[in-house]
Image (tube, rainbow, N blue to C red):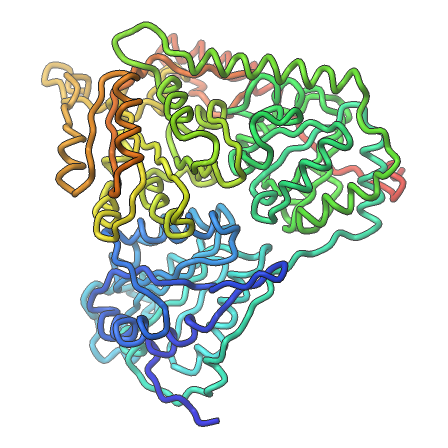
Length: 636
């Protein structure tokens, strides 16, 4: 077979177009397209290759407005398709590539595959320094792209064409490995992209990457089953790994058969429908009353597919029962061992199925416990109903807005959000009936994720309704991809909640004793010198309309409901702007988040907050590993 002479850029396009992933017999394109912002660093290399070969090879190129946004869109796509595919992203040298860093970190934090091709300086160093090159006085091979090393699961810089023969397969391996996946970065020097090489023809033949489903070890299953049989108050905490492994049916069967209640993390919400009898709702710092009460008294906690971040554990205050034991069912060993858990290192679906089978003959949790779960769930459902009910006042609450939107869209549409007070409120209040109906990025809590994520989800699932919640603060940070949605003819609904600033962190600021300071969107007061003047008036509806969106501004819930009907019928992206009452907040429900308060201050309010902080911090517990035999007993 004759070699194929092509440039590095052309070889990348040919290679990506031939890659597939497969799991459970379902095969799909691994890289269905490329996001690209072209500059001098990549327009003549990878850009030329995409223009010449992308169309014929079925690798379309999408042009976003912001480099960070395109990586968010790729990550959202990967999340929606359970990490079985992702987009590649390319940007020019210097600021263009550096703009991808934030979103690369978000992808790696959230264990989501994205493939990045940042352009780099000349490998031959003849023009040195080139435009937008970072010059380091003592390390001349350091570039801006070295910043990607800390946020990537795989990093490679291509100095010679033949290095791609190893680098690209390694990139595909990491992208498709459920343990190692995250951001993969291949830095491409500007000159190398255009260099030609005689590539083995076999390099461009179609290749299918099997996405692993590791099975648990029988000894670990036996030990975990013994712990569950001995438990009186077992509990399941479900995370994103449950959804990525498509283990929701296995989780439901396990919970129903053995009477074990399930509580949700941000990433795990939707694994059970909100109205399932064993779904006790969200747990932890942003959790609900039912889940947090059950967690506090649980004696055995089965953690399925969760990385157990501080919100899920309530900063180590959620699980208060003396002697509580943990079983960590996770494909990632690092996560499976957290909280001193008995590790079940396995795919979530296979692990649950094996555990289900090992418990055959067990009657499950007791009737009294299941009655308590039922009563607590009913109490929590009534609380949510009440929180979503409109209150008297000049403006609706954020909770009431969410309730109205949820009622309009139902439990099947995908709701998207990322940062501020909305993730906590949505976790409590949004009622999902489908595993893909809740899409909140809270591992990195990245402002600006929301609108690009709407693009990613719609590209992954064009027939699905999508509603994006965004606050005015996040909207001001990254609204540019509305233009991309208009250009691509992609329709979804954006609900822009205007509460005049960063009200989430404003509330946190006051809760730790500080007065209002630089979080609300206000003019600077010439008398005080502080930003506590009148609110800044921003016409968000006219701004969105100017970018081509259908823009609707409403004053109340009645107007919101009418606007939602209009937006859902629209064939273009829609933005609905509604002002809310920032002081009508959703309360906490026995959850706590560790935000240290100043130990010394001249403000009495800070002293009071510090005392409350120390009281709560005293509830934190350290969970150490306890070696366990196969029969579930502890080693002595």
